[in-house]
Image 1 (cartoon, helix red, strand yellow):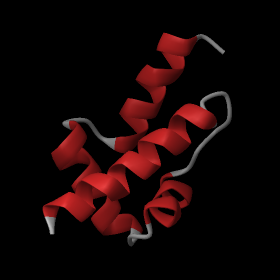
Image 2 (cartoon, rainbow, N blue to C red):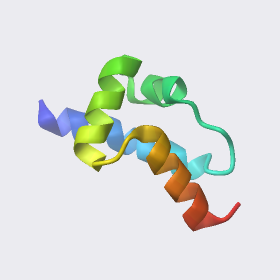
Image 3 (cartoon, helix red, strand yellow):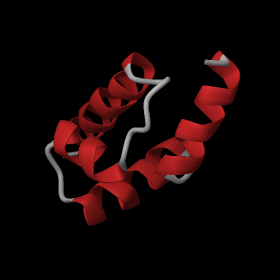
Length: 65
């Protein structure tokens, strides 16, 4: 179900925003999304068009902790 996939990734993205000044691991985000780290990374890259950690890095730069 693609809608569920989007929701799972949205949960992770919200979590990233809330913890932007901390080091968020991919494993942690996968837990938030309730997915396996492997599947989470693939899904994230597919939907966000960027690897997880690259996205986190870009968001941190944008927010200037």
